[in-house]
Image 1 (cartoon, helix red, strand yellow):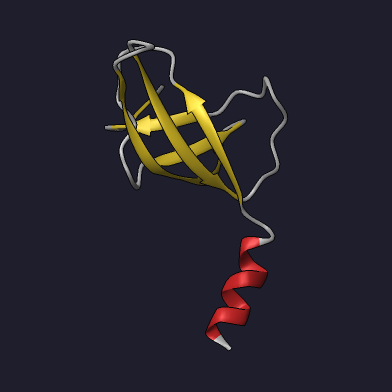
Image 2 (tube, rainbow, N blue to C red):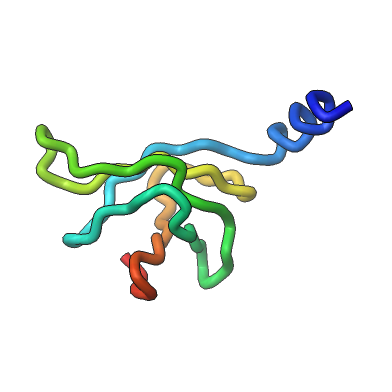
Length: 79
């Protein structure tokens, strides 16, 4: 039943790639917020050597549209 529950739960979670504005680097486990509400976490993040910007993969409970903004909480600061 655990696999069945996991598959059902995944239907309500959405994975997105993001580019951060600013100097912070998002790391696994950092909180993701949208309009002041916690909606998920960062699953992976790094500094892109090509873009020279921080990029991350996030897993969230809210379906987002292209162009929507989210905040990543890095060391108690929103980025």
